[in-house]
Image 1 (spheres, protein in one colour):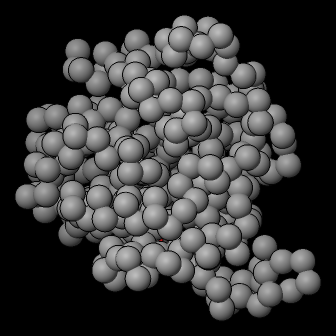
Image 2 (spheres, helix red, strand yellow):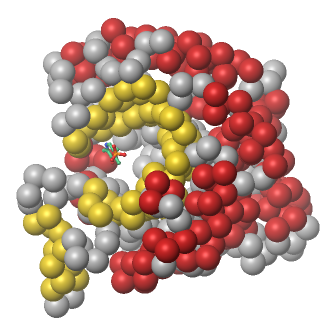
Image 3 (cartoon, rainbow, N blue to C red):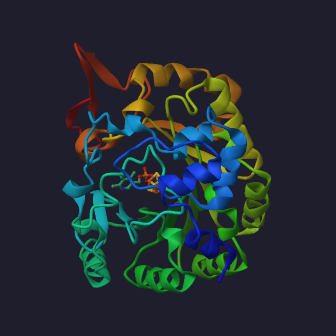
Length: 342
Ligand SMILES: *Cc1c(COP(=O)(O)O)cnc(C)c1O
Ligand code: SF4
């Protein structure tokens, strides 16, 4: 068994185990599952109760303040069966698994991932391929989830070949593994990446990372060999209250990523998912934080500040001036020129 697989197998899964590991009396109660590999829990423990890591991964009773939506970005609306979500003509999300190397407390799919009845997670690969065949306008498959690196390289290669055979040109993996269990980027994975680059015009790894404390020595060591591969390294960050809601923290994060060869791609305004109220901030607060980034970062190291409109209508740039301010909110225009209230 590989190192990362052993960590997944022996991860902390109950409040009691976690409390004992962190040496605290108890973990606050929530209605969502708990999953933290011990190795990462050791880092959380080292950073302490008020740290960005603790807030992102240790359950809080605030998750019971339920004002958000179960499906904030309209996954169900755009689900095509066979694990595909097709919202933008040119590209589709592929959700191969509901499992992740950790359970993030702020997860925008937290109400979907653990619901057994959702058809977006039904493994029907034939259906997926048939859909792609009848939609030649789709040029990119974006692995999301769940975390696609929970799958074996064998499975991923099989799928990648099939995708290239139906005409997919670009492949992208969204993953939190390099932060949570950097050892996932082992020789087998690197060989896998080398192999699939021959099937596609481009292969990208979009690494989900929210705070400079997540750029550990091991993270950098494991990313470094990827820099010489023909693979794009991008990052994706969620703006979270109490975690990274400051210009200086984000500056440090994006500069750190840039030094590691990772291009900051998106900074997401948090989706209004149920159970994430305590991470929410307003658009105006987010804009204020982002405004200062322009002076601190080279243009190529400045991610786009993005908002997913409710109901999965569209991603839009969350910057001021990109919407009409109305009495109690904002009116954005989607890529289809449709007006959506936020
Ligand atoms: C975010 C998202 C994508 C990817 O969009 P990019 O702007 O290419 O990163 C694709 N499909 C869906 C449904 C999405 O939510
Ligand atoms: S890794 Fe992503 S999908 Fe998985 S729990 Fe975290 S935010 Fe959700």
